Image (cartoon, rainbow, N blue to C red; front, side, top):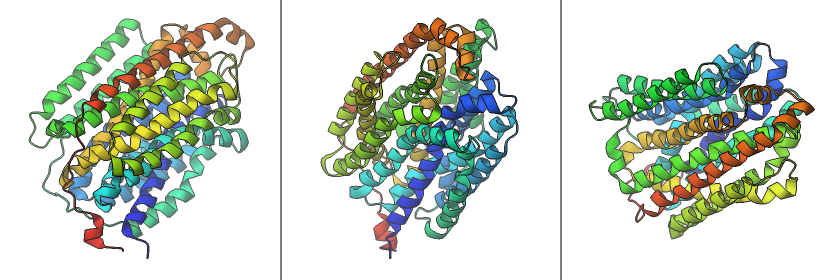
Length: 486
């Protein structure tokens, strides 16, 4: 009979892979959706992508706490069902605003999946095997985000963009049934905890205002003073959120967890790398499908295969080796490789071939893979068993928040170089030789700036990573001791 830990790993990996794929599968299809779906202005197109990431980032911390109260497996199964229904609705959307709304439903389900998968795995695996298990699961998040570009390109170019959502439905139905049948609650729920309503409202409002200010300002939907005001108010609310969390008895984000050096160092490095990585896929898609290249989605997806392949190979290997030799050198090597890859990407030309792009893409992908798994394992091993739901939510919140804010940073950098009309045309998928000739050099300059920022963030992540000290403790009982080889 298959051991319970492998059932947990297979189910959670499918879940996180699906949810991660859907963070980016839409990105490469945006030009096609803009041309074929009524009511899709550049702003609506952007929020088809951004709304999913925003909602996922906002709900993760609260969902992590809810899982500690009501049970991780129970909410995980609910999440799978909600994600599947949301996918079906997205495929049936008839207008751009409808698709934005249905993406939010999908994002709620993804939030339940993301916030519980790492905690379920940490409960299921003994400490000496967690790096490998979390490595496979964590790599599925990062690889899924990159693979979504390839899969989305293939589907959009063959059977149509609606099938980027419909393919989730049969997989989701089977996986929901299997999760309900196979997974078990190994941690006792703490049902007397309360929900931090004020913290949730302040955090969600702050992050939303920040992103609305950046995106609407970059696209010229509001004036520059209004955009700066929204961004400033968003930062102020996020600062207020940290203060609120010190005053409530049962906070959404227990700041005491950051007193654990191993946890806080891992979290800081995770946020910085997420900020760097968020720029990567967004910019490359529009570099490949925008002026002057205008590649079709399928070809653009093929260009990104080196990243997916190198990440898929490096991640599980790094997780397994870090279980035996510790995470330090894998984390350092991963950040250096990724930063070097971003530096090479900051020098790409307008018509670089597949082979010319392969080296920097392999460096970025392998660097992500070497870093992600050992860092997540160190983060989860640093906390007590009763904190794993919150710790899992914190980790994935940082990943999604970093990626979401990174999109805003990208837009701001592009808006500083390109006219707003050009940005709108690029997002809308308009193809015009005249457009490429007029904005191609400026567009390339903005891409170079984005990747320079990504390189700087990757190298900056070395600081908390190297200051983390020795690997943290884990007083967690293994699943083997609880359920044996079930």
